[in-house]
Length: 311
Image (cartoon, rainbow, N blue to C red; front, side):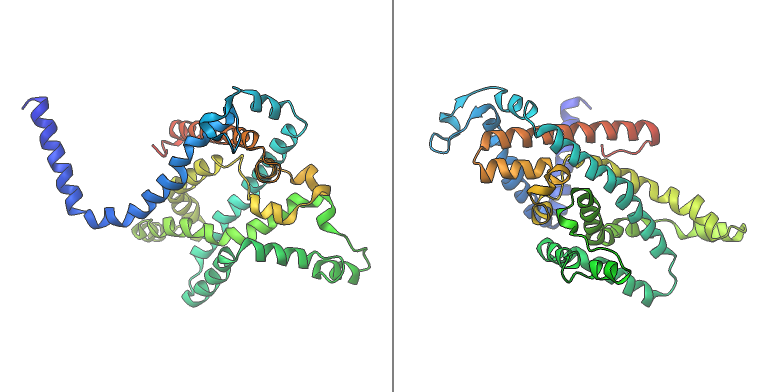
């Protein structure tokens, strides 16, 4: 059989498989259309980063300026501050929220009372579905120096009330705590699903050999969870220069810019408030390129160390 004949046979086989699974392809069609419309088509506008963009002239009519906007950003006074704040917030989240999500999933997996497990899961999942605006409003209310519950407790023990939201040193802790409370429960869904896929016969065999719950956790549960942890870590590294811009905008103010101003908030102010679309596009492009490099590098490292990768 020559290569041409083999190619046609393989193509016919793939066509038959597509026809057979056409309902599944129709199910993912909306997601594909969404990605094309909102992620791939807008890439045409990346060229704004290299032009002196004017709304009236349009993309094609705007003058080409090369790397001017990149030089303006990195030569400006806000570059180091925004990059530093973005990295620190993400590193702190990686060191706290990421492992806590895994620990919570392991603790839920050890619960044997189904009703209690369902109640706990529901309680920790619900915050994910609450709007960021509402959560930010709750945070502002809890931390209010007038009637906030936190300051009321401080005053009860004889302390002096603190206006947390105007103290730059408190912003990162507030933001990370808020994000962890809202997202940690939903993040356990992936790990809980991965735990359900571990072969139960392994636990039975370990019990017969005399392994206790802790040894089963160390030698079966955690190794079985490692592929999912590695994949989630790779994806998490891709967002090291991203941040919950909407949430930060709801909480920060000029006095806390020193620790709260991130790349996302800088892009927001430059593009939507100051109408400097070229600069904001350049900064956004820089963020995207670095994120891609981080994902690629982490994927290669994970593949070499643990033979686990996205591709």
